[in-house]
Length: 376
Image (cartoon, rainbow, N blue to C red; front, side, top):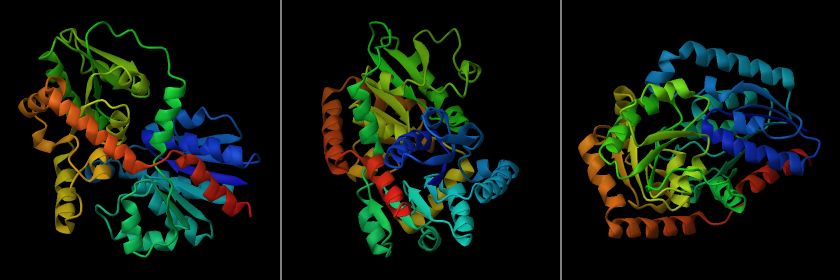
């Protein structure tokens, strides 16, 4: 059978790679054409990359508007590429601003649309639910709390499959890489995000924090696709206790004492490695203002980090927008690096959150739902 998969971000590339392996295992004759990154490109089988995520990751109202020509060009190209390929199934992985537009088009042309990792419409943009009911054949969601939401909006084609990061971290622990030589000081992981606009907003605060703490070694979880030159703009010879490792986030977390993390998938990964963390998010002021308006009006979203959303409790401290400043970051960092009671409390919160997530096997279950349906 022929599958067309679209992932538009680093986390989608990771989950897409695992899903592709499961599809190729469950359907040995599978042909996969995809939008993704290096993780998906490394999957062995009958696969073809269409576009790399480095050309796709625009985030926020303003950023999308500024890159409107590129976004529209990608949409047009994608639609024609799908028609030319004529797949048996479309598989969308998160990335809703792009994927839901394509799903409308492919539904109109008679294709089966499977969606893996639901857009967070329960938080905001709930108007999308009508279009999703119309366009999505089957939806595989990964947060336990979403079960009640999809039941409340009469979305019977939605199914909980578990969280794929449970598999990712478990597989890493089964075959850990050789430890990195990071010196004798305790390691503080800096996870500033995967998009340039995220990094530009939060990394300077992280580096100033590091400058104030020569007793620790601060290591940035970098992405090779952004390159040495990009990170070099931030790190100068004055930063004596800061280094960068590329595409080795799990190796870094496995050796870390604490972390400062840009909100996103990385917050959950850090928790699954049981590393105490401070969560930071600082975006474009206009984008944040528009998002805050809608969220406040609907009164749905209490937290921004996956850890707190899953636990439905303030397990980790979230610093958002203007709260990301040198003084507040220093205060919160002290709580997780020095205060043993705060560290212990956070680790207990991680354990409760992991219990809520349940069992591994998300990629296997999702591939089964897709393959069993179209191979009938």
